[in-house]
Amino acid sequence: MSKTEQTRPVDQPAEATAVLDRADERLVHNQTPMDAVRAFGRRIRGGDLGSLPVIVGLVIISLVFYSQEETFLSSRTLVNISLFAAPIGIIAIGVVLILLLGEIDLSVGSVSGLAASVMAVLVVYHDYSLWLALLAGAATGLAIGAFYALLYTKIGVPSFVMTLAGLLGFLGLQLFVLGKNGTVNLPPDSSLVEFTRSSFVTGIASYVIVVLVALAYGGALFWGARRRAAAQLSTPSMTGIVIRTVLLAVGLLYLTYYLNIDRGLGYLPLLFVALVVVMDLLLRKTMWGRHVFAVGGNEEAARRSGIHVNRVYFSVFALTGFFAALGGLLAAGQLTSVSQASGGTDTNLTAIAAAVIGGTSLFGGRGSAYAALLGIIVLQSIQTGLNVVGVDSSVRYMVTGAVLLLAVSIDSVSRRARSSSGRG
Image 1 (cartoon, helix red, strand yellow):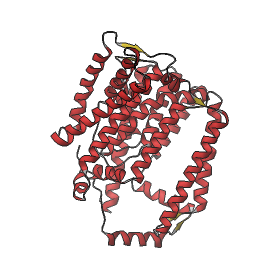
Image 2 (cartoon, one colour):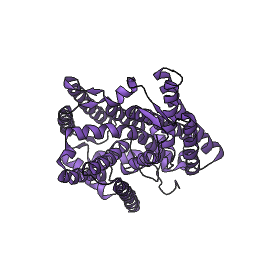
Image 3 (cartoon, helix red, strand yellow):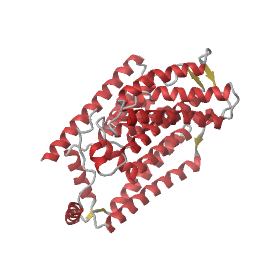
Image 4 (cartoon, helix red, strand yellow):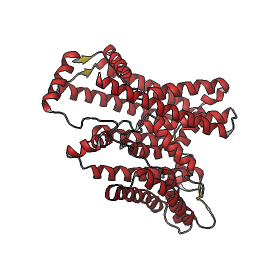
């Protein structure tokens, strides 16, 4: 997969940056809500679709399945979607990171199954404490990611080849770890099982969390606006910030109320969302995150600008392995067991499909941690909806494949539109 298909400047001359900043200031010093709408329209016409196709697709999916079976949008169904989406969604966070570099990891499913097997065997057969076993499982994923990084940076093995080999090799190692029994049942009173299956935030606590999230979001927007104003760049209006914060608060409060009709907000989905938010902040607000985008956009340009490219690859491969292991551990707790089928092909392909469907480009340099969240919600909604209306599982694979193909096609078309807009 070539990284030169999509070029992006890593650094700009100070004079050019100053000119652009002054132009921004002349055009819009204090953006109004209508200015923001017009800017959004320009981004869409320029091929920068962002998460719009995913959101539109999710609305269409919901309406179609609701028209067939009203229970699809019941509070119980939505709670189930959030619970079952979380483990694979966490794996998809790692897939997003590796795709941002323009690489691929085909073994995330096998790594997740191996990590879960290590944890289960240590707990059940060797009487290790759960926390030590969980650390061992997470360390397994980290070690595999570091091993991949060494193969890639020191030997030059393509990521497609080495992770395809890992898919087979780590599956075999998983079978070896599980032994002749093939299945290990976790203790039903395990805190891992309780956390993934029956721990929920309900009542006043759930609403307090929502209010804190909305306040944090509004505070982040306000702080960002102040920093842009101090740098004499265009800033969103305070009215727009307040409107966005209030809309988020109202939407989350209603969603919380609706989920509380059934069991409430699960700790597992909350962990998933928290990981997405943290990774998004790391990607957008830290030097490491900017380096990831730079390497994915144009590796050679990033190298010439002084970025330690090998360190970026090492960190991303290691994090991908860690998230794969973490997702596998949580999936084991949710299923209360680990078997030879844990982390199978379905897990592997679903995690990769979620990252792509959520809006991460296969060509590197474009994407967001929120792609994992949006993509897995789309896929889990499709699976749940087909189950609710009683459609055979074979149809689910065909529908998922069609949605994945559509997502890649949209990415290719938007990339071509951005390229044409840049030339124009």
